[in-house]
Amino acid sequence: MMRLRSSERGQRGAALIIVLLLVATLAFILLSITDRVTASVQRSAADRARAELLWRGAAAQEVARRMLAKAAEAGAFDKVAPNSGLLSQEFELPFGTGTAALRFQDASRCFNLNALVSAPADDSGAESTVTEADRLAQLGVARGLGDSEARKFASVVADFLDKDAAERIQGAEDGFYSALPVPYRTAGGDIASVSEIRAMDGVSRDLYRRVKPLLCTIAGAEQPSVNLNFLDAQDTPLIFAMTNGEWSLGEIRDQIEKRPPGGWNEVNDFWAPYVEKGGAAPSSPGSLTSSRIEALVRLEVNGRTMEEKLLFEVKSGAEPKLVAHTFGDDY
Image (tube, rainbow, N blue to C red; front, side):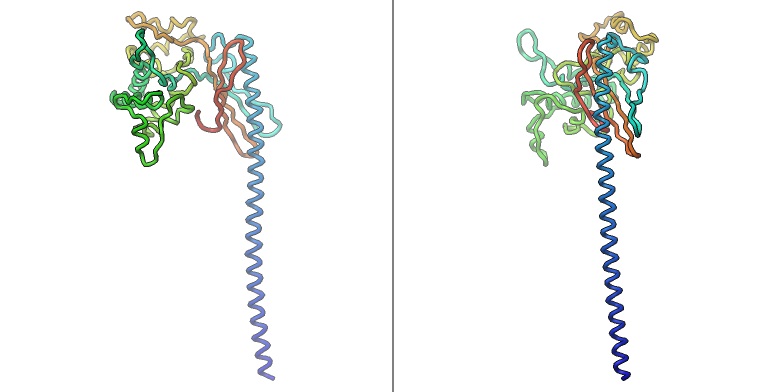
């Protein structure tokens, strides 16, 4: 009789252990299911918020386009100066929930890298010196690069963009890039983003950060018409490059600081001191209007934010043209 009772106690102990193991296993399974459901709910909420932000971004794009179109139709871009018209304030967009703000700014003050795609020709039809490459080197010098480093940078960019296979002094063509551990080829034409110069020979992170604020990529070989009324001290290297380094940075900075409260009335008024000292105004001396305007949109929905950048080409009497669209980062 005692043996039976001992056996029963053993069976009961084993059964308890089995039950405890089953409970632990079920708890683990339930915890795993809970984690998966929670993650799924969070992903769904994030997807909904992202979709909401994207839809609002699309709406903001249309609002910005219509505002620019209305201003262009009214002739507001015949002369554009700081603190005037659309470029003088931030606009709140009327969404039911969350917040949205829209701000416009001039985007004409930059050096177009795509101007280096092809070299100009002289009267004999032979290729002459790529003056845009010289100006790019001057811009680099004004941004703190050494003369040799700046010229190498300009040669590398010109080689990467031009259509021929002739390697410039300190430049690099397909032969160099195809021999790298991860080979690739030069663009042989326009590039879409300034960030692409990071793939070019010798363009370090520090060099990129120095020159990036004054560079842009516009389809075609023309430089943007710089709005002289929006120049500030940070833009002096751009004018320094436009004059091939003949007008000193200090003189350019002084002239920028002399801008009248309502902006320059004539393009020649800005260049007068440079011309008086014997310089010749650039063939593209800039303008008093902004042909490129950037719309900055900041959206917030349910604690999530998104920044949208829209770049428009604008001309008086013409429909604004969207040429670049990014979320968060630069073009």
